[in-house]
Length: 302
Image (tube, rainbow, N blue to C red; front, side):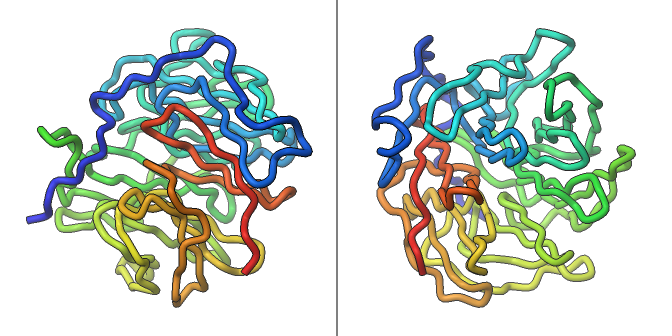
């Protein structure tokens, strides 16, 4: 039996600041850190290179509740809020309950939302389709798939007195460009798949209830590396070939080659959720889930 994992998300409702605060200065002061406040349970940050903006998913409270309160924000690379509610549930035909992972593919922004993957026009934010994943409990991260569409992880988490706990019912799925949902791996004795990333056609994932970097090969899990701590969330591949994953347990971002070892490259960050990567400026984009802010930091060199 897996132990309960304290996330603290169920009881968290961030205090919204109508004028978000940038705690560091302007563009020239982005090193070593900028903190952008005024968000509401931010779960994922994604860099859109075409628009040169950062997109942030805001759960607004419980990550399990279908309350129609979620929204997507747009930030500038200088750490300023361009549009707090660029895509806002309840407006312009948008439904977002607890938006988490984000990915761009084929001109669409894909968003994981409990048991549904939602698509929006990446330029206008207009809804472009909802794709239900049968049996999913906690759709979490999203990654572009070769040939179009996305991969999405289901962590299989459920509410517990201590916060959230894994059920073992988890999986990774592919949503094709035309909306078909295909199972990559799923079952009732799975780790709580969280971050998912694709490189060279290979699918990698990190689970929230373990400390391992896994690859899915022909429907089976292969352990590629162990990280110093578990509670793993976001997963990205760095341009220099290293992999990086955020850890709630370690309050850190760890980086290393595919086979390890992994070492901390960012420390003392509480509840670092689904991290993004600004590939133009070589920065980590870190959503602080329980702190209602995004931290922007330069990626340390190897």
